[in-house]
Image: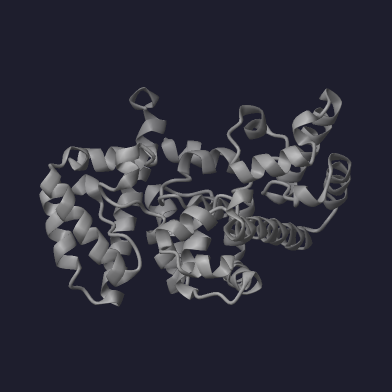
Length: 175
Length: 175
């Protein structure tokens, strides 16, 4: 069972392997290592989500600000984290037409100006048309409502990344 | 003035430039961006330290667990952050003799087993002899006292990194 392997990791391995379940926030995996052993994925995840929930609003916004723009500079330059790269590519964001890219970049800019953090969505559960539609729709949200929606997406991304890790620990051939 | 440049940054630039003032914890810089404008370095730093202080104990330990071992695998492999690389090299940790390396690695291992996080020290204010002596001395601390001592070192490292950034913004030729 993958969770047994995870429970047996020292903090170095744990942070190496789980450090990016919340994008660019290894601090969170490093914090919840203190709370092992975990019963299962849901239990581990609950510790991550509780940690986030206990952060002040600035910390929650900080998590969002560690996320890259969708189809942004980092995708073009190949400097995304491997997880983000796979997710954005899977949603078709690496093969946008010129007009789609212009539109996404314009909406992204408006979103960042309005909310003070980048648009975050679980790209693996979506596609480029839905992403554009959602970005347009969420731009009309009130700030408090949008912070909460964006953090829901962070939790979905975390869940999918954790599932991948557990699966690869159970079946290393799939790594 | 460097602080004016910092206050004028959007969150993307801010996290790019200040993201590693706390080692591998861009979340913290990303969080305090909400609290700009800052009066000066001391004011900015106070927001960072207040954020850390408000974290639960697991979060404080998490910050320490994001730090690399001194003279460890990442120094050998060249995978340290640029800041850590400079600091460890400056303290002479990249040119240890075999016996010094063995001793440091042994003490590091004992420290990590005892406290559940790696030994952190502001290497730029130290040298290899002092580092070894401090590691030996702090191994005898009680866990709560050592957590507090280690976080003091994190604050010193942050202060030095911030000074560097401000200086380079005031005098870009020094970058």
